[in-house]
Length: 71
Image (cartoon, rainbow, N blue to C red):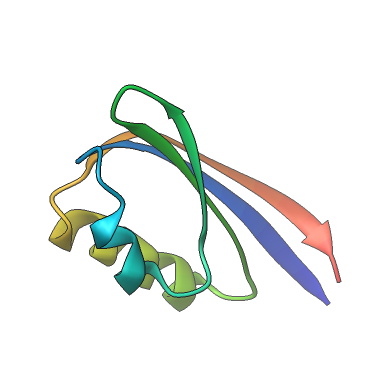
């Protein structure tokens, strides 16, 4: 099965309270107000859901990388 690793760099609030609604997304602090969100998805709707949450959380999208992986 082919899946994809998604890494999204965002800018947002420095407190991690908003992180509770990101489910099983790995959150890596990068610096002042920047975070890397990392997750594996098997379909596009999952990715779209994460992007919607980034938008709803009023986070600024800095970059997005998608890498295919084999499960």
